[in-house]
Image 1 (cartoon, helix red, strand yellow):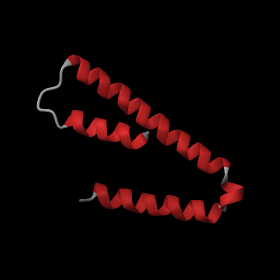
Image 2 (image 1 turned 120 degrees about the vertical axis):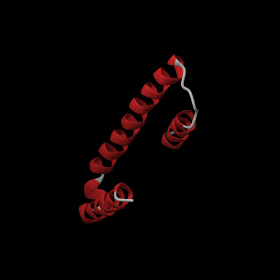
Image 3 (image 1 turned 60 degrees about the vertical axis):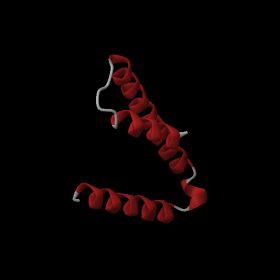
Image 4 (image 1 turned 180 degrees about the vertical axis):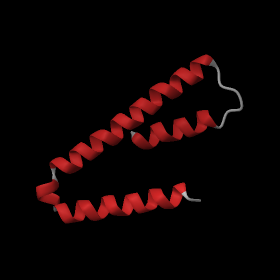
Length: 73
C-alpha cells in the first residue's frame, strides 16, 4: 500500500498546476504515507525480540546513512 501511495504522490507532484482538490488529496496522501511508515516501524519494534535487536539497529543505521546521502546530493 505504501508504494501505491508514494507513486500517487509523485505523479500528483509532477503536475504543472495543482487544483484545490489535488492539493487536498496530496495532504491526505502524505498523512497516509506517514501512517503507513509509522505502523511499519511499530510492527518492526514489536517483533524486536524475535527478529533480533542488532539486526533492527543495523537496518535503521543503514537507512539513516542512505537518508544522509540523499539529502547531501
